[in-house]
Length: 195
Image 1 (cartoon, helix red, strand yellow):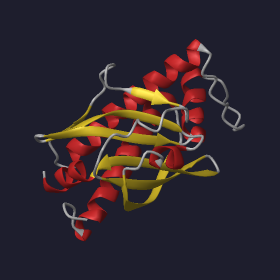
Image 2 (image 1 turned 45 degrees about the vertical axis):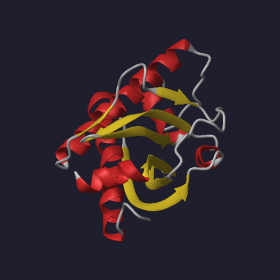
Image 3 (image 1 turned 135 degrees about the vertical axis):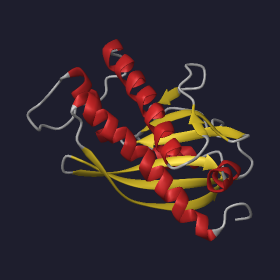
Image 4 (image 1 turned 90 degrees about the vertical axis):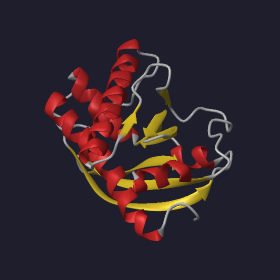
């Protein structure tokens, strides 16, 4: 780990948790969503072709860009299907009785459009969290940058030749624990710690 010191790992974990936490807070205020963010941890892994496939599994992958000072690059957020399904149900008022969140019907235009809006809001919330942490950083909400995958993508999606900071964030929605992720290049991780 050349660019990010061991001491900076805690900072990165805190930033990732705050991005998810701010999104949950904003979803709560707008939709009535109820979720919490727990502990987070970080590992640096080689950006191999199958890394995203292994981490994402059946969860939802959101890819966009992050700019920190003069450094930029892709950022990947892995959002648990239970988290996004609950937010979707709240956004579309599909349930209010505490039942399990619906599966996202990706063929349903209403579901797909609502998911796009939710991840767009997530990016805005994540930028707010970084700004409140004193960073000059922005996560793109641009339609040209923001892409949502549902576990079906090619191994060539992650093109970095460097190691990747894989920040695992525990989430709790209802009675369900799930793991979310934030993945950034080691270079961007260093910029977040040094900005």
